[in-house]
Length: 406
Ligand SMILES: [Ca+2]
Image (cartoon, rainbow, N blue to C red):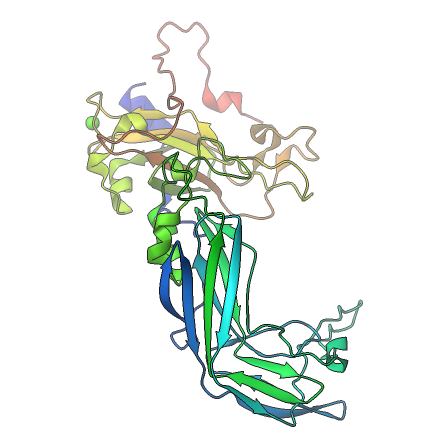
């Protein structure tokens, strides 16, 4: 392909380039004033937290003729279990090592008792019928007729779950508890929680490298975990457990640029485009360029329908001027579909309409990735490249416009 011919294919193409959007799986709404336990220690022998509690605020409400108290603590969340007393709750997310079980011990400091209180139940929800509004009534559960204290213990720990490469638990601390039969509110001035790990796996299984953590994941863990620093030594080892990811995934490379496509045709990403979004274009190894796309169709509506594991790789042309380095004037050429187009372009079997219209997006998305000079590509297969043909010996040249004329 000569430069002149290539440029004649491209003038109508519009390329919108945006910096890679890092896909944080979790954002945490934490305010500066949020009440949080203090981390005393965190290692494989256990995690120790302590919480000093100020005075709760008690406001009085009358609901259906019954006088209730709403108990709040500045910066604390609430228990929020429908029908159960609505009480302050302080949550902390902690990184933990891989183990068979997590045990929680909690001790309380001085406890104040306030009498003559009926703590308001947390609202439930009654879904609206057609033409009605949903209601959120506060209806007492059977607990209000029982003799125990709620919550039963002043702290609890959730079942472990993976947060990216980190095993985590959430600890809930209940500085205030309620005894319905006596009408007393118990306020613990301090709470001390110790988590211990039974059947530790990290020390007995040293096989396999630690999972590579992307900077975005590290920021997410730092913002979420109370013990992010010590939890780093407990990051997952070896291959992913549970649902296996294919080899090719976003974690396979550090470098991704999101390409937002609104016109079907050949597109060219210039050296300056890559540099323009803040990437160090001069250290890119052009042999490692790849372009991926999910295809442009929405995911199936049925929740149990098969979903793609990963995107498809596009066959691209890398124009590096033949010198093996990525410089000004070089570029990456690829064919892309817009968000709407002819159904057979998208591989739609038995389309309802010959022309497919995307009702969910105003652009199709492609992803450009690469490695820097001297760093190995994490992808297992060779990148897909267009074959170049000068068409000199072709008896019946194919004209792009004719092939897709309708
Ligand atoms: Ca070059």
